[in-house]
Amino acid sequence: MIKQDFLLVQIEELAKKLAKLLKKKETPGSNTDTLADDCYKDIHLSLQEVQNATAEELTEKVPDWELLELLVKLMLADDRINTDRQQIEKAQQLLYFVQERDRTYSFDRIALAESIRSLLTE
Image 1 (tube, rainbow, N blue to C red):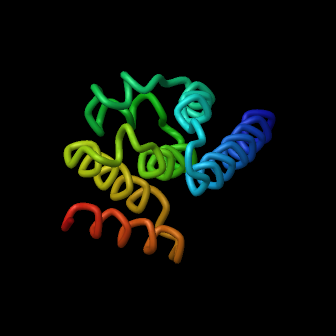
Image 2: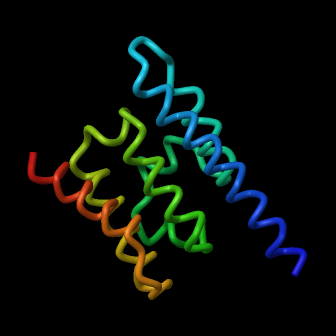
C-alpha cells in the first residue's frame, strides 16, 4: 500500500512537470530541455539512457506501466527525441507495451498512438 501511494505521488509530480513542459513548448524561445531533464530524473533515467537503451531495456528500468506511459509522452514532447525516427519508433514500442499491460480502453492512448503514427509518416 505504501509503495502504491509513493508511486501515485511520483506519477502526479511527473505529470505536473510534463504539463509545464508542454506549456513551455508552446512559448517561443523557452528552454524546455532542463524541464525535460528534470522529468527524466524523476523516472530515474537520463536523456542519454533514453536515447541509447532499447525499448526492452527501458521497460526493465521502468517496470510500472503508468510511468512508462508518461515516459512515452515525455519522449514525444522532447524535441531532442521527437525528431529522430528511431526514437519515435521506440516510443511506439513502449506504448504497445503499456497497452499490453493495461487493457483498459483509453482515449488518451489512442490519441498518443495516432500522434506517433503521424510523426512516423512525416
